[in-house]
Length: 344
Image (cartoon, rainbow, N blue to C red; front, side, top):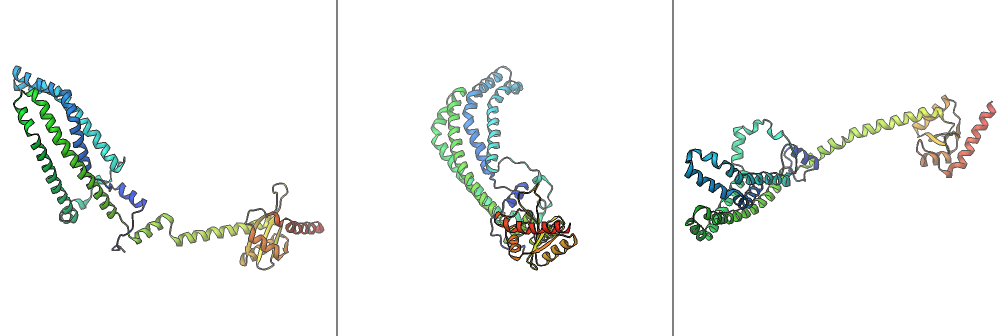
């Protein structure tokens, strides 16, 4: 059974168990590409906000105080440049993770696992099909990103050469624009590759958590209970209901019989009931037990085959009789009441 082919889609329970173990469809490329793009898009703002101050403080400190006190002088200016970049990276990482796997925390992946340090398992992972795919993706990504970055730098060569001839504060803007163009194109390409990788990771994850028919049956048994056990429980409940019905015969006013096959016990209380109620009914062996209980408690037994069959078929235990049977049941009860008055 363990070698049975896994061809069935995972059930919600299987998915939840995998999620609790930290197994989700997730691409680290999405996080890297999103953070990189966030940094690129935030860079012009950060440079306009603190870049010029940073360069001015840098030059002033070199001229006035020398390199020895450089960090004290430009620390605040550097922080003004880095703060928006760090905030953008942090928020982007949170959003990228939430979009892929939602908000969920589990410590199970952090628990010790000997398989992670098993050299045999590590060797198998190193030369597995998944490792080969990851290596191919890495090579493809590096090649495409390098090509796009080189082509963009070639297009910006003239502006970079011109900026190198300008004083540092004036060269900052064209150099930032050139880096922005490179970063924007690289980031866009990286994001496209990351989306493709995420689709691949989802496909691979769905294949990994597939279930065999045997596993589906076992899960169904665990969730719904074993069929044999359910049958035993149902049998016990039916037996308990029959025992209660037999005990309730002692409170009945009359037992209507077939006279052998069916037996239905009726009770009527004018103060609490709008119509007579069936307190017990049975067929075959159970009908015999009802008759024996009625004899023991001196409950009148009245043979009336048509009425007994109708009551057994139409009325459940605890229910009042339908209006169609009022007349027939009233005649039986009237007969029973006359017998009781005659005995007195």
